[in-house]
Length: 124
Image 1 (cartoon, helix red, strand yellow):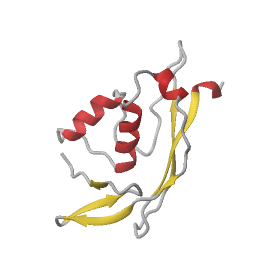
Image 2 (tube, one colour):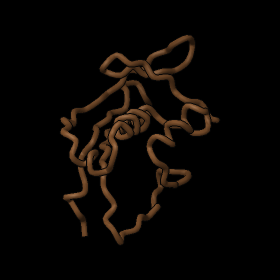
Image 3 (cartoon, rainbow, N blue to C red):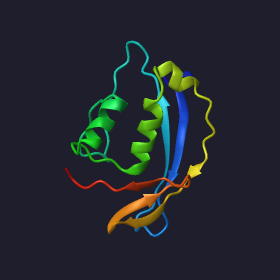
Image 4 (cartoon, rainbow, N blue to C red):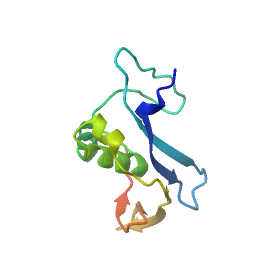
């Protein structure tokens, strides 16, 4: 049974114009009820593991993990909260985010609507 009380919309990202493959993706946050287990059935990942947001971001910064900008930004936002309950209680307005492709110092990057420029990670 779906526990809608433990599920919240978090973000809405649209692939930059000019990309050959386009996505219109929603990110959700959820609490795992006591006694429930997760499933790692997916066709969109080459590996599945559970990692705390701050740990995944540290691995990204150390060059040990690759991550696309929507995932990185979402994890940074979630990592700013002290508990799952705080994340679920966050007062958010979910509006589409569509970055623009850019080049910085000869390397591919994306520019977010708020002006931040994020470099695209290369394979570790």
